Image 1: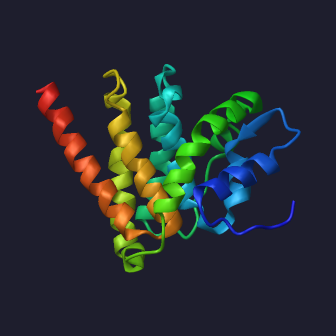
Image 2: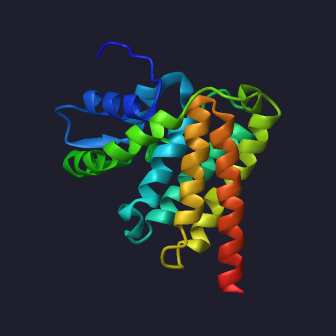
Image 3: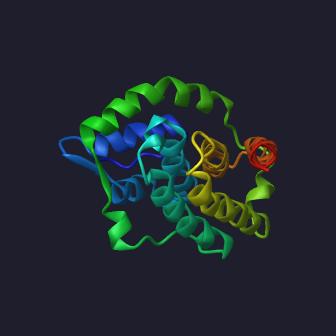
Length: 195
């Protein structure tokens, strides 16, 4: 496979499809190879997108993804340049036909999302702001464990993480601000409904 620059989410999806062509499964390690240097954004975006999609209704999916996202996010919070994943997590996979089905369903949405992304307010992605982003993502990831027990509520942290991941990928401060606003409003709503 020739090396491509990942610019947007569709580019990421296309490269992952190309890399796994002929394979039976799509693994987390495939994702890391494809995205190379811009690894935090997609490693937060794609797993969170799985939970925000109908696949998030699979029992224990929010818990597993929440732990994965916590492991990635805490590394961002501590300033690690690229994330390390345990072999057990890196080898996790989804059957490729199922991945392709979800990819087809997500493509129109990712196209729309890509049109909104652009490098804006890029200073928000430098230290110490990147550490704050990592800390917020860590809290959101851990919140998926108990919130996953409330039907539909896991969408709030999962979609918030999608926005943070997309913002990290494109260095888009406007999307980062939208993510923070969405998570704040959604968190307040969940708190209001539960209490």
